Structure formats: C-alpha cells, structure tokens
Image (cartoon, rainbow, N blue to C red):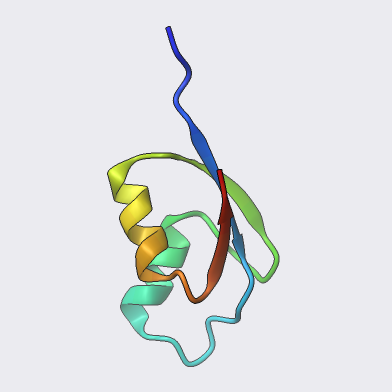
Length: 61
C-alpha cells in the first residue's frame, strides 16, 4: 500500500486580531503557538483550511 502524502504546516503569524473562523481553522490543523510545526495529511479538507489561513501559515510538501 502507498502511504498518504503529508504536508508540513507552520504558524508564522500571530492569531491576535484574526477572525474567529480563521482561528478555528488554525486550531483544527493542530497548530497551538507561533513557529509550531505539524504534519497533516494531504486531504481536500486540510488543503481548504490551509488555503483559508494562507496569510498565517507556511506549508511545505
């Protein structure tokens, strides 16, 4: 079986002053604090959350 691809996502900008739904997306991705990096599966749901908060995060394939 092939292993699913993962994306590294890092929070690079503060959540202070952002909209509540955007903060919820960041939390949904598993990010807790500035410069925190997590690996998430490359699914359409996660891609959508990353796209919504693209101005707050940096991602690498």
